[in-house]
Length: 255
Image (cartoon, rainbow, N blue to C red; front, side, top):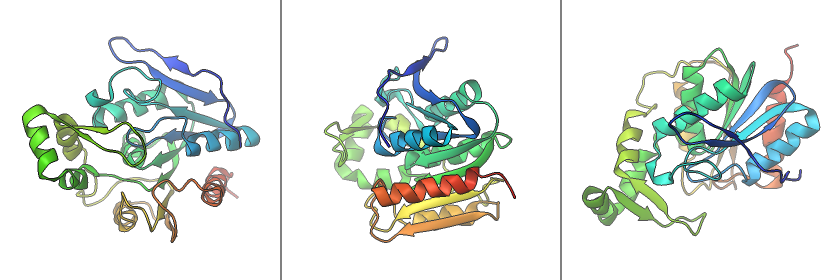
């Protein structure tokens, strides 16, 4: 599955940042990829899924949240609420008919919120190391120095294991994320099939988090798949093949 190198298109909106995206036309249901924290739409999973969709003739969309990748704005100005707003806009303006959401890490948090906000549009949800409520452990992992800097300056630059660019952790991100938490709710009224994929060697999101998410979802058709040797990315050829098989099952017409 090769990556297509054409330039992205842009969704322009009055008084707000532009959203960069790649859209592949095809059959329904469409698939929307929601990336992770400080990731962009050129990552391995997003582009592999685009290749899969092209081969199948399946509608597919990948995009960058504001402050990510080719989209406008600064990363440090983003929050979970703002990035959810971007996802809602992309769903409403750039897609038609039922959609399957594929959310990676933070994208899994966004996808769960999106399924709650647009239940009539969402035909299925796949979480890859889904990380709802991650601000809880992010705050703890900042340590005394990180928390002090956020208290004094409103921002802390945390080294990233995935990029040379540090994460910009802001007071606004933490405070907004606490308001957007999901797993303290008694139930998540999500009424579509859900598949949760998680590596048991994930250093960032504990694999037991997938079980907490599954327990909260109202729909009975929820399955959790663990990869004993899998890390946070779950982007090996074998893991990607499993992901596309899951999507093919969700996209298949009912018998």
